[in-house]
Image 1 (spheres, rainbow, N blue to C red):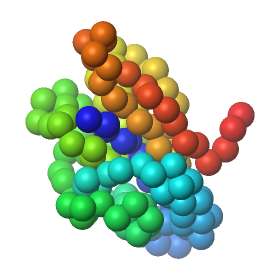
Image 2 (image 1 turned 135 degrees about the vertical axis):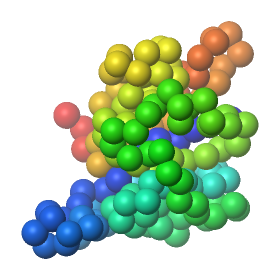
Image 3 (image 1 turned 45 degrees about the horizontal axis):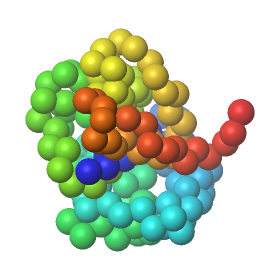
Length: 153
């Protein structure tokens, strides 16, 4: 099992797009990271995204490069301030699933899964970045296996 967490790409300001779709920079960075993930042969069975336009567009770019066998799906409960413990309780960790969503939700989910505490920040996500959580036999909770981020520093 691997769980891939992706913060949506950079979005347009509300004044340009009331739904805050991806900006040109957001699309470009997402395409670049998706290409790197494909080059590393990252296997994703399904990409699940929040209902917000910027998350859906990010998921579509990732899917175009990673070709998930089970496609794309929108899911409720992944918005910025949604209930992380309730979402985590319904999360099946038996397939390689990619979640595309928002902050602070995703960082709180990482804290809960890795440390058992959603208020503990253990990793700072970036727009379009991919964080891989995985299980290892000697550790109870999932661990951070690797990350691909658009910028270093």
